[in-house]
Image 1 (tube, rainbow, N blue to C red):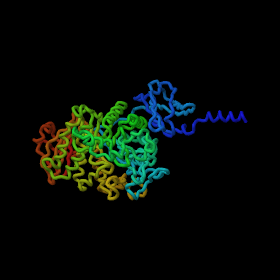
Image 2: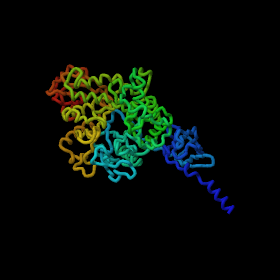
Image 3: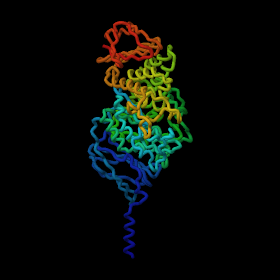
Length: 617
């Protein structure tokens, strides 16, 4: 009996503590050898993990610091991974007195950089889509057992079932249109309740997982590889301002200041201009940055260094894991601006061929330009380090241009004046321009479904400066669907992308005559633009709009393009002498849409409600 009792004590001593050994979360789940950054933060989460201390015995890997936080269930470990560290599996040994836990961790081999993280620029045309609303390729993942929201086609405020497989199955449609980059609204897990819903993807509940109703991490990576194989790029949508209130952090915050206090601050004031306002009150500034976007989206505190390291590293992980080509950062003006500058700088230093566009939804050109990189003389030298902006001023101007009568500052003059302020940007060619997006009424509907003006605006988008973005369905004259809230009205599903749809707009046969007409017009414009160096890189020269006609040129050493936008109700004669500074070098112009040749040696006429695009000879 005495010997048996002793053996029992020995066995009990050797069994690890069952509570402590349960490491529930390891973020990031793996890393790579020979990364462009040597520091790696690992966040461990499990019961009482904070009471343990870590050690590593792996050549080239050294623990620099480890931090226990307010919650006893987290431990943050900072590793230095030198170039000596080889691909392989290492063990992180956690000890707490006589208790020990082994956490396996893997350093993978990096994939060749060729064809990955390519960036995007003014040579590209971006296609913006909401995966949930595009196409359902796998109905089996519409409802996942244990997740809080299922698909419900009868309710536009709920998930519709679109997924990664649906995108892959309809990739030929996107490629045929001629676009060279696809921007997907976020695919992060958004396991939110049906009360709020988060089909849009902007309420992340796990920043390292693709939502299973879209597919898996592996499917997302494979989709990006397929897009690359088809000669296109992928732009990933990220959010560092907030998370969803069902994020697993919210049940056990690492630190008391991980998110801002909603009880004290309430919602943001949504006034992005406050960030660049030299006279802004501290109250307004704090409300903008620290207030919650909506009550279901806790506002992250970028003053917390552990959190900011986590977010930056999460970005690097997704870039390296998927090879994605660019990022669109949501609500760029709402987080701490010094953090956003640091984030942009570190990401672009790690991946120099990459590109980032920030959502800067403000109300003035100056307020927009504030957020672009390397603009001297503003805010005591503040540099956002951000290359590209979502050009809302462009969108606002074009919406007014075709909804106002022509005047000194009205109508087409809006287009002239918005471009005349480009001196405020460090590089306006890097701006992403658009007519509409998932947060705005659809342009066709906004201008009263006037087809002539719609085509003129589309031609403007494709021929002026910047990197154009078109919103899915724009190529089909998509208007509004009168059901759901405001957001859902302009976030329709693509007919043919879902089971039991009566027709498919992904085929010519499934489209109406009018849809085919605008589809072909859009397609021809984009394909021509793809091979036009003047549009990609050419200098822009424009003339003051007169009599509801706006004329501008794109001038490049290999090509010169003239664009005449006649928004009046009658044909107009172009007086050659007015444009002689450019036209004197040319004799004819070839209309890129119908291949007709115009004699430029004398005055010439442009039809009413038409935009004529001429390659000059």
